[in-house]
Image (cartoon, rainbow, N blue to C red; front, side, top):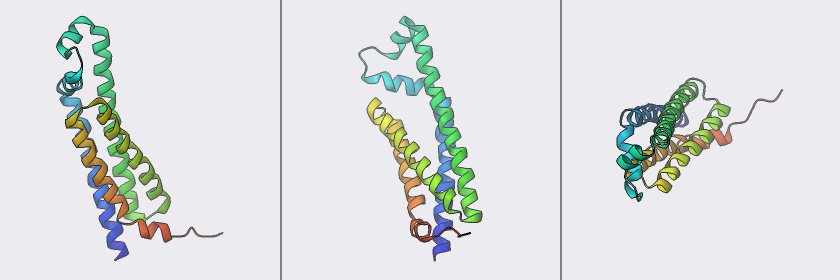
Amino acid sequence: MKVKLIRYGSLISLYNGIYAIAYGVLIFLFSKVFIAEYFRNAPVRWFFFSKTFPYNAKLYSYLLIINAFFIISLGIFIIYLSYFILKRKDKLAWVILFTAGILSWAGLFIMNILLKNWVLMALSFIGWVSFAVGMVLPINYYIRKEYPEF
């Protein structure tokens, strides 16, 4: 039963990595739509802001594209470590993946809450919850697993 839980948890986190890559590509492809969504609650709309302050608007666009590449690299990281855990059931890899993934997905979720972007907030919440489920399933195995003594 423990091996099945490790396998299910690793597969869920592996699919979460694929989801993160798709999420980053979605942000990259529809960056203009998401920037307009960020400016929905601002006193100035994105169209007027980009025409009035073109340099600052370009910086906003670059920041969103950097965010997309960060999420894509997070997805690659999650896929790599999930595959490693799936093959070797390594405790240290699980701890690194657990810490990095929970903090990254939670950071994305909180950032989108603060910026009031409801679409990206929902997408990052789905990513955070699915990653947490994938990490919590095999937690009993990794808590009880001891390192070999030399």
